[in-house]
Length: 326
Ligand SMILES: [Zn+2]
Image 1 (cartoon, helix red, strand yellow):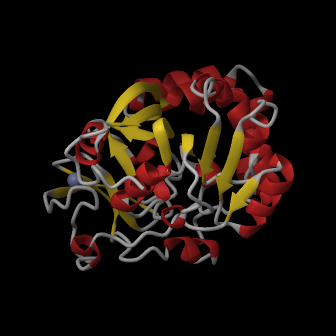
Image 2 (cartoon, rainbow, N blue to C red):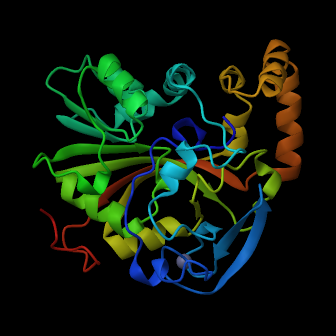
């Protein structure tokens, strides 16, 4: 995977209108989370600038899309540098991914009677949950082909509508968003939808990137921006919880280097034949990966993290969306 969020890249963007303050100033360097103009350049990749907010610490692409049409632009191939995986590769990638990450998710779902997987891709997480008696499963996936595969693989409802339009009347004990957060162009819209779809006592499971202020452009080869619209800074989660009325009940922050040099990651093939050859070569010689990891850790370590986060809503947070539960 080229970035920490590559797994579901470009197939899960959920279209939300941006807050007017941001949408009206698409050319301005305004933070899309807190609205502050106090932002600095972090770095540039693929001709796209990544900025960092001095207030909430969010990293975000500039210019930030003024509408929710980024998904269509990426899917239409307007960004040649963004790798679009075909669904067969995606499915195989998901299998390898959840070989590593399913146990943690399953641990948080022990008492759940219903789950909604937002940005479910080809549905492998839902497929893995199929053997749980009495568990109602549903997914949301905007890529029609991936959604079709997910329906066949997971044998459950997979809707092709934006998350904020989800209004089935059903509430869920668990909402999973695995490598999805960075593609959603509206924090307000997303957390409004989360609150509307969560059952009382429910929780949200997130896997997403966090990074320190001194993150380097070279912490990843390909950042996937502007398909990835934003990344959390180390203080951003606290800001989000305060603004939207959530509390963190579990937060596992894993240095990217701990995952980057896992052999199974290097067995996940992409579209680039040269990169695939390099991956096969490295995966074939087991001594190479520890050496690469040592080098990476010494020069770039502890700056980029892959985080597993569990959020629960506060019932009366005095937040922007308190009392708006459907
Ligand atoms: Zn901000």
